Image 1 (cartoon, helix red, strand yellow):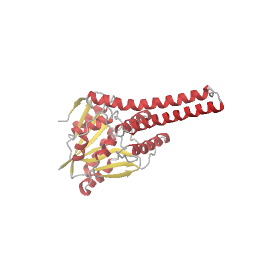
Image 2: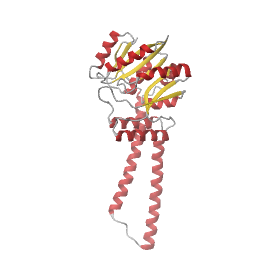
Image 3: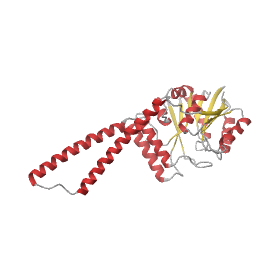
Image 4: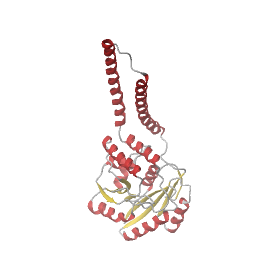
Length: 310
């Protein structure tokens, strides 16, 4: 019998885990032609998440867990799960039930009987989210798809089922700075998309603040595109041409009309504008330099504190 590994990254999901476990058990009963393996990744939780997972593992031998020494982030948790799972098919899903377990049978059928390598999910709306957050999320997908060769579907979730071949392809990309949505698109493979209405968390609070999402978006843009560097170069050339043109205009005007130089307010505004552009370009360079720095240090993506995975 084929094995389906369910990878569940967890960070302070003590309140949501009981609901998730009950739902996933119901689905596993329905899918009788596949054997389940549950792999919970405790990403340095500081509540009773790990204790609860251990309790479930004593009740259900299919449940495995890996606990990190600290919080390394969801990307590290996903990588750890993919690296340690044993399934012929692998699915990544959150513990808060925003990734409906009811879609698992449909995803499995698409891979087994329709010949897809992956079945991914996307939300058709963002009901329940703040409007400002939804606006910037849509803006991110538009920008990302314009500047990157790795296409990301608007509303795409990390919730997807994959074949072992696709998982091995993902694991072959062992960079330290990881952006899974970009990795999924970059490696290719035949993917079927399933759309569903947004589902709010069953319990607990989101771990993604606006600032965290903003940093994550910057991570994605710089991980799969060098166009920000090209934009910085274009800014440099553009402002150099404008400066040269203005020098010519001022010299000609002074020689012909004898006009004195304009007042200092306009000069200060120009200096601040150019200074801001320079800082932006330096910041873009700094982002890529920092990534290079972290990659060359060869630090592990995560550090395991304890596990029952053999």
